[in-house]
Image 1: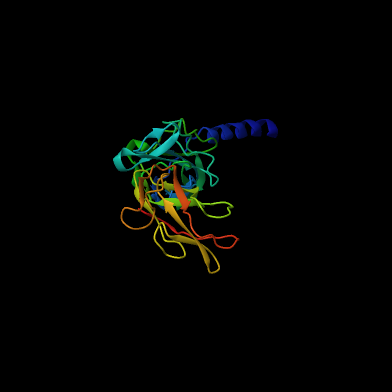
Image 2: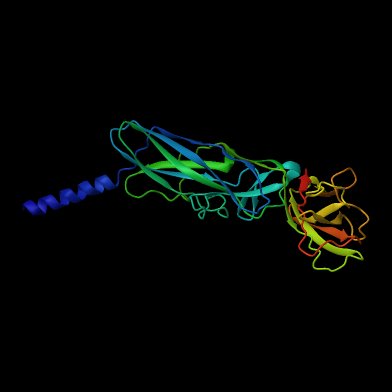
Length: 321
């Protein structure tokens, strides 16, 4: 008889516990630090990373512990979307693509149930102890996406406010709601994402090689190349110094010991526009964000031929922007 009476009582007690609604904490507050990529150079095409922290503070004035779930929905931001990528907006309305992620490897986007093309929000579960304020710190990983060399220089910004952020939270006993279904305690969290794209240039050079020759009784022509990559719309000019002899553009010297071969570098194929560093001798252009190849024309004019051997010179390329 003891077993027969005990089992129904135990079953009824368990049903009573399972059917109790989850009690709510006094409330939760949220804050997200601004994401500032700082000054970035994009000419290499590499991605640029930064991060922020989501702070969750929940107060429990009850005498029982509470299991909590927070669903932090983060939308597109004020810059909107390009496909599944968020955008910061910069000078003249130019866009710079970036993304927010849940993981340090930056493979899982941090999104919103309201805009599923961005990704899903990560449910954040933790225990709120009795009569305690619980603080949880959650990292948010950010990345300016790769291959954006054509972004113009200047300040870029995306703001997150109002409907762009909707954080919901609720306590539970056994099974939490999915973030797609949770609408309790909607809270909005404001933060900004910003970057400043540097206005800059990179340059590489392919030397001028006049090859092998005997007597220098006629013009010997050859060409090299400068490859210049400058930020979109950035004006620049390129000057060449006088080489190790520090001479005029058409009187530079390749040397072997005390012997020399005189040569010149020019801006045009006709070789009548010397390329140097004085006014009127430089080459100007405007950056496109892509590599621009600029030929350098060389000429060795007829002259007395020195002894055989290898003659060299070093010319410094200066890009002013």
